[in-house]
Image: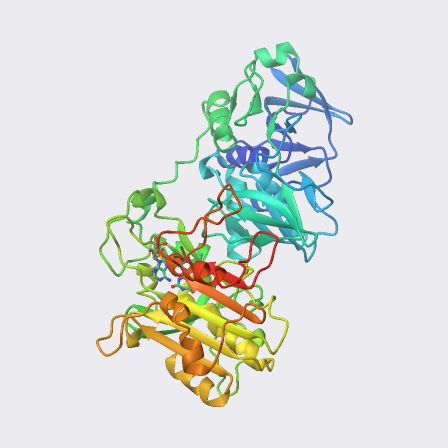
Length: 583
Ligand SMILES: Cc1cc2nc3c(=O)[nH]c(=O)nc-3n(C[C@H](O)[C@H](O)[C@H](O)COP(=O)(O)OP(=O)(O)OC[C@H]3O[C@@H](n4cnc5c(N)ncnc54)[C@H](O)[C@@H]3O)c2cc1C
């Protein structure tokens, strides 16, 4: 009789594979995963961890014979000391927890075909969502996983590891804390609206919802009472429901619990040291940087100590984007800060990345003095200001970025996105007004250059509100642009300089300053206004119950323009006021 296995895992999904990997690392020799299909949910894991997989195996019964459990499939039977049933099934009648438009571009648990070269949003936070993300990325889709609510401790380790690799290789974007509020259809494509101001609306080719799952029942694999009574048949648990007559545990820890319970003599791998104690281990920071960073800072030019223009080149993937869009940058919490502010729970977060969105700026001129064409570049330019700590907020990223220099490594997210683009400007004779505060000038620089490159001949004005003259990282370039293009006007407005009166962007609009200075009138019939930066300058109305917009107490540009007949971009409807809020 063939020697019995130590462990048979039924189901080659993230949880089953994690348990198998753990069992192997604990020294169990004979571990086999039985997979019904021809591939694993997470391809590549078997080879990397030396797992034994039998494909095309459908289990028909789990019974006892003497001291062994016997797992029968349609083709053969396996004797084993222990069995883990990792199969899961969808919950009947499951409904997405958010309003989702129906249609052929919305899928539940299914991969759209073809999946290569399409942008797909996966919504979900469990192992199953990770499996869908990995499969889509392997098929060549650009994937965003909206995993609001995800608890990384409940993810299976191999799934968590693959997600980390996908991010580093810029093959998938993870929105850990964002969950869409609604998915609507706009121009025939799904548009995701998020509950978090830091994640502007994103449009995709397809949306895949990962449904709620639960463990299968013992009948599903034909487990007999005698087999269950041994205490050596385990079911992979989920948050939702598990069979009550079998031991179970969440995906991440089931391998450990099962191996510990069934094989007391096994040498369990030592638990990973806590993030904070790893802090002391020499080389750990270098290792974390290697594992997480995927791009190099190629230029870091301070306008002054707290304001920088930097350029970032990714190791993988393209940087193609539309002028006005944004990308995300990240640094590890392990990196030093320029200030000595204390962050809450830093020991728990120490090995994680702090990521933020950044508009893509533009160098405006190339090395020959022509208008630069960034579409051919292999790096992205950013314009970033240091945010100081306040009693309410300890900033995470910019105090770490402050200590970086050219050649240092950084994380650049794969997803370049945003609807704040020139798409609505279709007439080259239109008036285009860009209004910003501080680094809100970044996307305006990209759009101004693009318009001029394309030969836009209508008036273009870019006005920016800053505190002092020194806060203008691109001043000289704009002055050169003005000399070259008579239809272009740059209007920097410092608010804290003794020699000029204090005026905010709202005052410039209210007082028709551009008409007086440049003869440029703001007529809603032929003018587009782009607003970027501080939300109180923009002044978006609340989404009220009635038809009347409810504006914030501090009057913003939107209200002033709306009173003059301008209309705001809204969900599903383009106006002639376009905006990007930075917080
Ligand atoms: C779509 C998008 C694009 C963005 N593009 C840029 C950009 O091009 N350049 C840039 O510097 N920032 C940009 N931001 C803001 C950026 O994402 C971070 O919030 C910012 O760099 C602060 O990060 P932090 O971790 O240091 O501080 P956080 O802990 O994130 O602090 C957030 C607080 O910092 C303040 N703050 C955030 N951004 C700014 C800013 N730009 N100027 C002044 N105060 C600010 C606000 O009070 C905000 O509440 C953008 C944000 C979004 C949503």
